[in-house]
Image 1 (cartoon, rainbow, N blue to C red):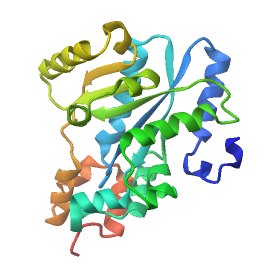
Image 2: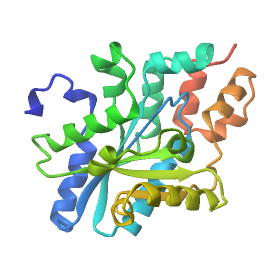
Image 3: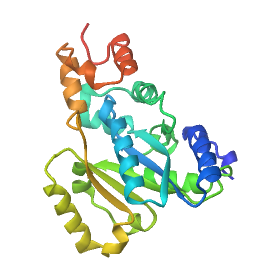
Image 4: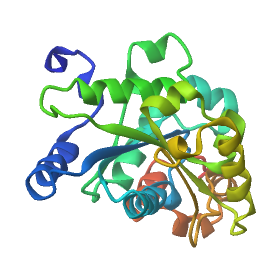
Length: 255
């Protein structure tokens, strides 16, 4: 019974339950789906949550039997981010707050804290697939949800090229791969790889490969460089509430 789970509060469900209730009353034949992404979010920028909107639209268009009812951003642990970025790393509490500000007006995207705030996070590095498994288990055993929910992992093409997809992961979860390159060649390469590894009919129900749009070349690296050098071009790349928070807390700035 997850109502008694001491760490259940780390995954907010208010938005999900509201949308699930609406789905059950309006289109009960559709399968509820949840999106999940992980990453440093150092800091979070517009494309992080724009990718959710792109993924939701494409997934519901290509798989007409599903409905996305929630999306979760899971900021990485301090041990990973500080190891990767050193003095340019932003502490987890500040990264969490910026993520919450960025999605505060969304009626379906929220911030999952299990990866960064669970007891396990203080003991070891947690890889993305562990976050995926845990969220899926949490949702499908949740007392108030009471139905099967498939979780799709949302990632960039660079992440997929590094990690790939195992048979075990694909058996129970889905993947949405969003690229930065306007050239569709990378999509064909990934689809050819998937055809060699999996049965074609199997992966096409669980893997969606798409190009990003417009400002898909935004990166946290660019924003950090702008902040470190006291430039202002980065402000258009973040949500206004995140911009205000960064300025107020003098994140990665000297003054």
